[in-house]
Amino acid sequence: MLLIAPSIVFMTLLFGWPMVSGILQAFGGPEGLTTANFTRMAQDPYFWASVGNTLLLIVVMIPIQFVLALAMALLIRAKPRGSSVYFYIWAIPLAVSDLAAGLVWLTVFTDRGYLNSVLASVGLEPFSWLAYDNYASMFMAVLIAEVWRATSLVFVIVVAGLQSIPKDYEEAAGVFGAGFWDRLWHVTLPLLRPSLQTALILRTILAFQTFAVALALTGQNFPLVVGETYRWYTGLQDANVASALALVVMAVSMVTAVGYLKLLKDQSEAPR
Amino acid sequence: MSHATTNKTTAAADHPAPEVDRRPLAKRRRNRILLQVGCILITLFMALPIYLIALSATSSRAALQEFPLSFIPNNFSLETMETFLQSTGILGGLINSVQVGIFTLVLSLIIGVPAGYAVARFAFPGRDPYQLFLLFTRALPIVVLSVPLAQLFLQTGLYDSVLAVVLLHTALALPTTILITSSVFLGVPRDVEEAARIFGCSPVQAFLKVVMPMAIPGIAAASIFTFVMSWNEVLGASILTLNQRTLPAQVLSSLAESPLAYRFAGGFLLVIPALIFIFFMRRYLTNMWGSTIR
Image 1: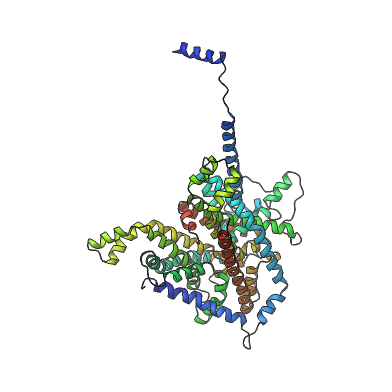
Image 2 (image 1 turned 135 degrees about the horizontal axis):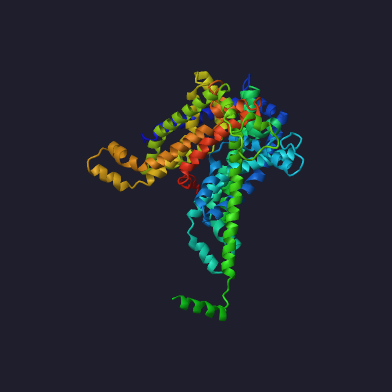
């Protein structure tokens, strides 16, 4: 008991207290409790844009990441020559922060960057990928940078999950004549469920926190919710509205996590 | 000997080999090639951006102005990196980042290792709620903590100090540290510890002299992870500091008004620890992220 006491004290101080004071702050104003902060938050022109962008990014990005990560994990499992080198390179973005990832892809997408250099050298017209009036290309840039950065996490979790599945099951299915896709769909994926579930929850919660990628690539042109918190706090110096935004992020993350757990549990218990 | 071989070859030429179904072999070879092609494509996607930022950060300012940009490192120069390092706040930020990372690492080990050991060894009352609590805090977004903590630190005078960021990062890293170290201690057999006790070690001695040496690699993994998390964390660090910025916070706050070369150099400097970290950690990665929620 003595051993865990410091951690409990520390965590309560740094999680419990800020949480309570954060909630108070979000509802606090010059005269008592109000919801004025939430009204101000919702009336800000950037707010709904940032909510829309965040949701769109998550909805498009997560399926891409899972398919890509699964493909990568299956490739590694097939043990190609040099698989340890591949594993190293594919895992590098795991330790790259979202700010750094944004800056890395800035070299590619900026007006005089590498992508336009390629276009120019094959005789095509350069394109300003990150200009505020090209919403689609801006979204693409942020999406690619995020897929690049965060697929590694899913990849590593799936590789770990695959390692714990005995190869016998798949071989047995193969003996009974199941093709590659059948084996993947009916044998491997159901066995991977716990790993995929963890990855899904972790990825979604982390995806809500993405902001520096967009900030590094597009500045204010592609607002994301957490980026808005940062702007309200540092730019507009309004801690109350920032707290309100933070609370929204937390509520949405929690609801999503619980929702996933329920959804995936119901499916696994449903009769087949 | 040679006569025999010639005989055999002529015999083979006279009677063509019996029909062998070569299709499975060909299919196998084709699959191998497809596998390599797939791997190489993904490697290009993963590695090319890192190559490009390294290239940008080691090109001279003049070379970065050219268009189209060259993909080959033909004018290597440290000019861009040097200018970046001499910009205001960068060197200080670098020092702050390293300090914050090391203090976070030490503090989270001091608090986390005993807790991890307790979780692994003792069935104390309230262990399950405790673990659930850890899982919950691990999923908590950083923003939720940073803004109220900033207010708190303003009142206590901790605001804008290395310690403030250390406390926040330790809180963020602690759940993971406890989870990893407890899984490490689970891997150390209890018998060894009991044997040490029988030979006259006190519980503390048994822990320090027998258990710790066996757990060191795993704990090292946990601490490197903590350092990198702290190095990468940008939002909390920017909210909690004003002058004592960490490197990412400094880069973020001057993003809007800085030239491209500055941003490229900053990005490259932020990526370097990732390359080193993954290189040393590649064996542990699957263990670290493999634990699942059941």
